[in-house]
Image (cartoon, rainbow, N blue to C red; front, top):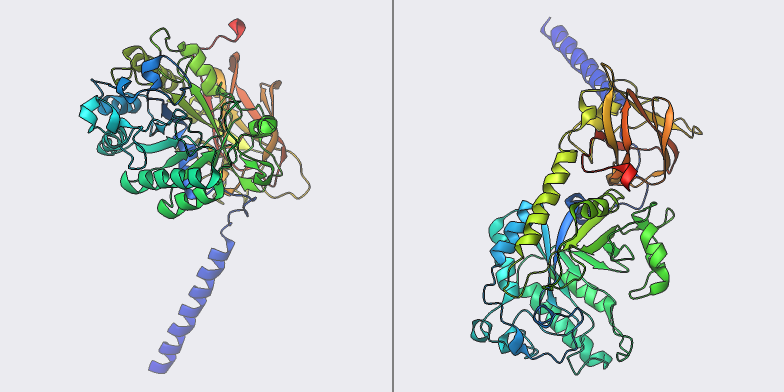
Length: 486
């Protein structure tokens, strides 16, 4: 009898196990990615949205933008330098990455490099014992929620080795190693191809430089016209293309090549490399501080935000410290206004209390890929995925407003870019009227409209690389925007 009950128990356990396995097999799986994909570091970079550049050096004291390399280090004396004030200004603006010009085109180094005397070591500031880079990274680290980045200009119009390929590339690499070995974690390193028209011919060993950067700091993002992690958007106005792909063919890129500006601005849907664009722009007219200049109006900064962050890019806003060594109070206040405006517009998603439905969903109801995912707080890894309908071209997701409609003038759409950028074309209808014909979405797409009062907002995906995956949608009201005045 005991054997019978033992056998019966074994049979029941096996049947229950098979039942559990069959149930797990029925849980819908995520769709396959559409390549290429971002790295972990690129995803974190994209989520920053707003970052800060700090142009500071001898130009700050000569009222110029591009130095000559002949400046006397004695002019550099920021007697009130306070990098903690820089970091506080950035933190109050919601910025999580700050990039300092460790060396600009004039060749003057903000750290005491042992490979040149054209540095802070030859200046009267702190009797030649100062180190701006060290004070900068110390202040950043002390804050805790902000990361450091550095810019080391390839063009150096001071050093005599410039124009001699081997000697200068060795010099540049030596300084690069100083910065990346001595000053702790650096999350973004900036390279560019800027150079004066009549400057000596010079071949930069970018491949060697990038390899050394990777060796010294594996989690860093490398910026240049050609990446390999972040690309230039192609202008210094902060505007991305209306079509903005994070994908591009890096074999078609080269640093300092003016003929590829349009390609940089839009990216390439057939690109084989994930290389998102960064939109650099200064809060003032110039990149270095000038007493005669003042910060851009709030409305202009918001316009840039919509055309950078709102077009699948990161906005890198330059805020230059003044000759005292502080960020000017007018710039600090404008940054606060900018952050306050962004929070006013986007802290509330008017769609959160609305009903949401879609043309279909992967795995059916309860499968984990329903449209309700587009209203949660995860804008990356939870998403609405339509059913794989083979040849079906269009899919839609709809926000239905209860109790008489909503007033809004911004529509936000975000893709689950961790599985690739997919949407090629989309349209937005409000109460059956088409208001938007759009192309790419990417990490974030923001559409500013004339003020609308509507009940049904339908986003139709007209064309996509694979099934579209929408991680977030939002309806917002921007009180600073008047479409009729634009």
